[in-house]
Length: 64
Length: 413
Image (cartoon, rainbow over all chains, first blue to last red; front, side, top):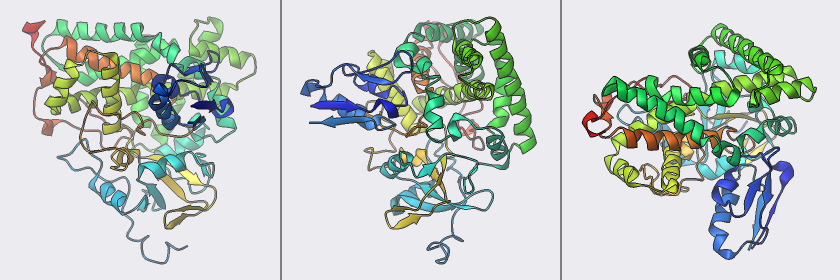
């Protein structure tokens, strides 16, 4: 699985960090998302898919 | 005007509708009927205007993310809540009523304070506020009003700490907030409350300019000094965080407690849960099930938008009814059951799209700490009288209970 995020549209809700903290984190200065791992193991797929779904600004893309 | 000529407009029911007295946790029956018929229905508002009500989950998510939909309350066709709330909305632009790019630029001025990490670092302070309030309930005896002794002071104290405001100011802003969220408030009443709260916010910003204390208000003051933020925007941000930061969570604490007490098997499961993930999951399900904002999220269409067999025309008011969308069987199995072990994280209680509640990480931690501590430290917690005697906040823009008389087993502590 490969993940990408569009930081320019992130609204810093933090929902991705709550759902998949192994993969997503937030910049201290503005809460904008950044990736800890852009190709995480498939075992994390359900968590990553949930993060993608709950992102209010729809900035997370997951390609399996 | 496809809809204007087929008679559907004259038959449009008035929104919002009343709930059934015997189902205080469920949305009004009319909303279930509408959702079964299709994703969008025509409803009539207080001022006679006819607008689109979006009742299904998927369509609500899609439209809340659609750039052809605006939150700008100054645009013609915007579906205002009441005359008094319309006057307040038109008196100053806020994050809630801004479109992009203005919205994201302003929101990013304050999002550093709402990161998951930053809010988690406040958990011990929130726990100590919650424990202090429970201590005083324990000292005073076994009967108490949950709202005035716990549900309202918890988030009021937390927002004071968060903003660096004096704790003794809560009575002042609780009273003004109450007037801002009442659909029966006149424009004069909402104006007076807004003026008072703006004056308060301006004074707090001024105090923090002279004596910064490392909180959000101090940072906003510094941004104004550096001319990176206008004073008007800073004042509106502080005002919105005060208004949105205590009463919503207070209602969620009280109504969530009542919902658990009314579902003994769920309460038993909640008490048995020991993992933080179980407590967090229960809070998410209560958010989905209860929906404190119960008059829908308000928008206006900027272009014609095709939806199913209808066209939402440019200039039409659009309302996302989050309460019924969170009961959509297409998104949640057995949606009318409270089930704290289900996965409810994709609920729409905080809204969806760029305007999703900025305070949600803080609200989540407050709810987790409040529910867990309340049921752990007050064994045998129960309603003093029957639920029929509980008064619900039916006319407020935020749903909840006015008071909740509870009792617990003193001998067991």
